[in-house]
Length: 267
Length: 326
Image 1 (cartoon, rainbow over the protein chains, first blue to last red):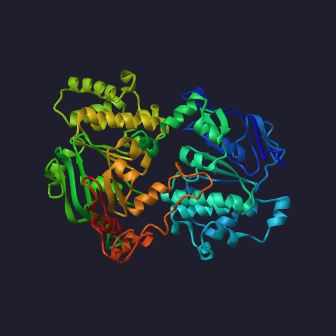
Image 2: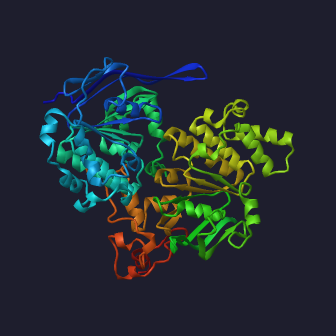
Image 3: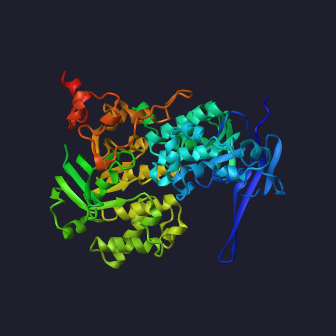
């Protein structure tokens, strides 16, 4: 089956706010369309304010869509009518900073199991009581005895592993990774990236990888969309984006990245 | 070799935490000459920022103990100097640029006014002269419309513009040393490139010595001439950027460079470092990196010192030392 897993078409989102009685509008996402195939790693890159995280929030049903449509597995999950049911558990998210995304009062076991409470229908019957928590904690490189500890007893990299295990407990098809390594040190980043790759093949996952780090995107993503001020200015294969960028903004973005290797080649 | 602006020798210090001294920096060496940009790179907790704060004696005196070494700034021994004389240097002879410009600026004061105060504080200029200097300082950091920015508040500026203002402030007294601690970490890459260019240009024009602290090897490679690599408060390698990053000799530097996804082939696994960052309360005997090092041998139970590989490239590693002497 080569039907697209996720289809985003003509997506728009505007935030409006008032300042001193004057109404301002921020068109955060402008007519964005892309599709993600099953098993793919799809990258979204852009600078702050480009709309990366707004798109993630729209996908996760954390914001409502102004116009346009998002379909998942052929079913509409978001459009302007806002009466669609969101496939809880099939789409999961990992955020940037595990210090703020994990509840400090909960044990690691409670954190990982928490998403199961919000499932319904077939998913609830399937995953209901039994849980993969031990298998998952090992799959992310931690140990069973860690389950009874709390977040403060772990390093940043370990906490991000917990956040990943929490995302996988509902056996999702699509995982949205919103800057998952940006808060981590380089050597820890490498461990988490390796982990994401091995989990992808182990669990047959599809990733939407959101990042401003071109090095990580180049290494991990099959196709890449470049966002600038809410617009998708270029969408191409990894090869084409990094070797033959066509849009001036993509070229500017790539040439701004301070690569130690670029420096060395020029010497 | 030109006159050293900053000369740190054998600097060791510890912090008192829960009644126990914890060794934070151990035998740190760092030299910067006028007009030179030196990078200090390391992961969280490696002691980068502590080194920067030690230079200007900004560490909390109640808990900080300097157990060895010296910090000479323009020939003045910082550690034995009085608080008053070091206070004279801060902002005037030693400028600072920190990571987050929003917290470095006063949100309740216009850009022009805060810059004016800084200039008056560190010079004998009259009010009129200082006012003119405000305009010139903003122009120097390539702010397009200084007459407008002067009257704006920090929240009205973008992150990149705010950092330009902070740089204008730090450079307004024409310091001998500029300490830039992760100056572009909070900025977008396109803005980062502009800010790094600006720092490079100002250092060249004014002959300022710059200590650029970053966790980003790319930033260091593009901006600095020399680099010092810190691991758990110890210098593991130092030398010219082209030598240290292209042909790293210390196993830690080697692993750090290889763990970057930038050049790794897709499909291959990234190299990682085994084990975890050491608990500094129980600093391992011998080489600090040995517990994680793939090349460790008997000799590593002794602490290595920085050994010269050639004139400018030094490494604290027994494996390397034995190779160069044989």
